[in-house]
Length: 140
Image (cartoon, rainbow, N blue to C red):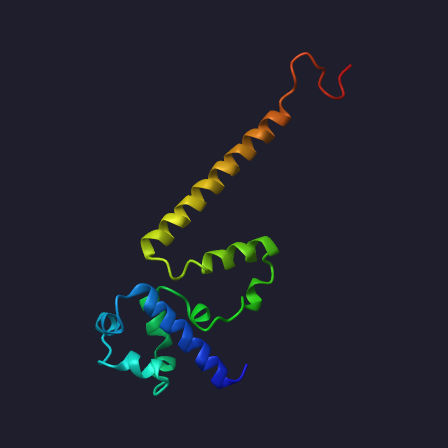
């Protein structure tokens, strides 16, 4: 991807986030203290000042720079399984959702995982118990 294509892709992501999280461009500009018509200039490709503001925009949208720039998972994550990467990508799709909904989703996932882990521990305990009426292995 060329530098210009990358800038356009980042522009599109930022504009989509603005549309999904704010009532208007002006509301976004007020929320993070930008001059009037800044977003309008971004929309018309008159300015790419958003590229200098990526950390600030990431904070405003509660996303990492790699998410804003749509950078693939870093090499530091090579130890992740395909299932883990799949779950991470699914969660990243929730970026446009309001914070409260993302938090509720994360809490639901956490509760579900805990329930499954608790059930797994119970199953393992049952497997280790000697069965009534049967001799334990190795006993005659």
